[in-house]
Amino acid sequence: MPTEPPGVASSALDMGPLPITSDIADVYRDLLRVAPVPQREFLSTASPGAARALAGLLGSGAVHRDTAGVLHVRPPRTALESWATQREMEAARARAAAEALSGLYSAVHGTGAAFVEVVEGKHAVRDLFRQLQAGARTEVRGLERGPYLRDTTRVPEEVQYDGLRRGLRYRCVYEGELLHDEAMLAAVRAAVAAGEQARVFPELPLKMMLTDSDRGLVILPRGSGEDTDALLVHRSRLLDGLSELFEVFWRLGAPIHASTDVAEPDAEPTAATQRLLALLTAGLTDEAIARDLGVSNRTVHRRVSRLQELLGARSRFQLGVQASRRGWL
Image 1 (cartoon, rainbow, N blue to C red):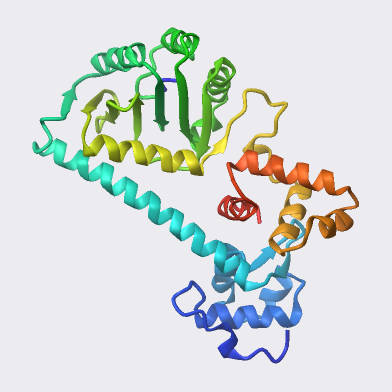
Image 2 (cartoon, helix red, strand yellow):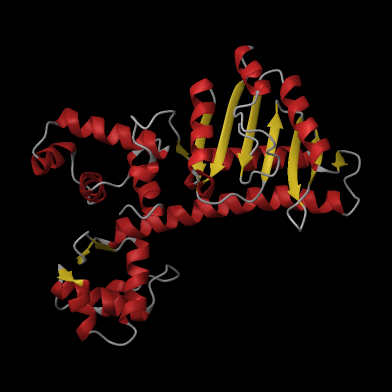
């Protein structure tokens, strides 16, 4: 863990509370009549608000734009089921975050003094960060969203190597922006090569570390960004909330591998991957997909399994959700 079609009735698109307004439904009906159609051609004859409505359809997955800029209409049920599942996941993240952040609020305002200690200053926080890892017995978990504590170019630090050698399980979720930095990406891969299990998620709410199930450290950069404080959290409802918060992001994150020999999220989606995902979300069987792609059933199964691992999906339905959330569809 580094420190750092024509004749479609209007009622057919009455989606109730789902994100399909009347304007979006009109654009969807228009596309049913003409798709596939180049986006530029479609918008050149569409109503003034069609561009915004089209964006909503693209966002929900009901319409797909391929690499040539051609629009394709998809069955709305699959797209909206995916949308609903995404909202459910977002609600789960929000509930977990609310629990954890409410506890932090109470702690800062003095009602959580019995189970929270304030640690002031980067040096003190950094020392405690290392001490907690050194004292951990079974597992270290972390959400990593900033290099607030970095004071060394050696990553992972020796304390993590020691922990891995004595059997500690390290799991860390990294904020996506961090991995845009080549040095940080190399550091994360070094940690993974040493034994850490790592995943990436676009945005994280905070930086924290949990050791075993009895202590947590929440890192709080000061407003100027030049110094750092922290909250040391002991066994409590707040610590339970922080633990659940971590597990939510761990389930949603995409795995990070130690070598570029294994495809990374940033290398995807390729055109072949997008074609495979489009066939999967259309509900085709493996046999039908294999015929379409000109490959064997075994090859289809292997590619789907690889994508599930890459996106951290336990089922093909989750694979569609994860791919949609990342804009791969």
